[in-house]
Amino acid sequence: MPRPAGARRFPTHLGVPVVLAVIVTLVLVAAVIGVLAGPARRAGRVRALNVEANALAAKGEYDEALERLARAQRIDPSAAPTYYNRGRMYHVRGALDEALAQYDRALELRPAYVKPLVNRAIIHAKRGDESRALDGLDRALSIDATSTAALYHRARLRSRRGDAPGARRDLEALLAMDPDDASARRVLEGLPAREDGVPPNERSPKP
Image 1 (cartoon, helix red, strand yellow):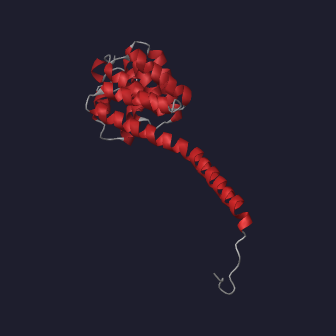
Image 2 (cartoon, helix red, strand yellow):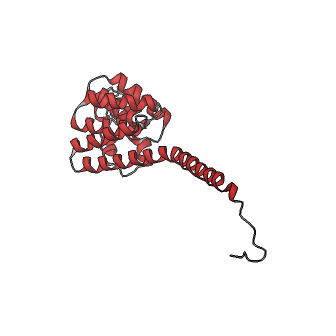
């Protein structure tokens, strides 16, 4: 069959090598895309499992929630929020040793992670180790001075240890950020009115 005028002959002797080169290039590109997309896919799956776990926990289904988080940890053992979340589930159930182990691991992975610092301090306070709890809350607030949870729990600890002025400062700072925090306001109203820690009706009479 005659070729149209001006048509160029395709170099058939280059056909196979060119096709192979194209195939190899496409395979390499796909591999690179897969490598780059892999972490993003894993991170997305881990986030989804955490969301599922939170939804299950909200319904009181803690066993199922913990199972989702265990799966998330297997997918990405370096995701600190998963350890925090799993610790929170154990914490709510009263499994404090397990909760502490999860909080500790979250902090190993992310030392400046405020939420597990606060929750770990709450457990230390519950177990009577108030000094260690205060150290943890001080550290949390040195990282994030706006952590209302850290301010609230430090205020309660300070009040329990007789540091009413320190407790008042924490609660006033908290209420400046969140005026509607009823729990903080109740604790503040229960503090002694004077800076020396003695309520007005217990003052010694003046000579």
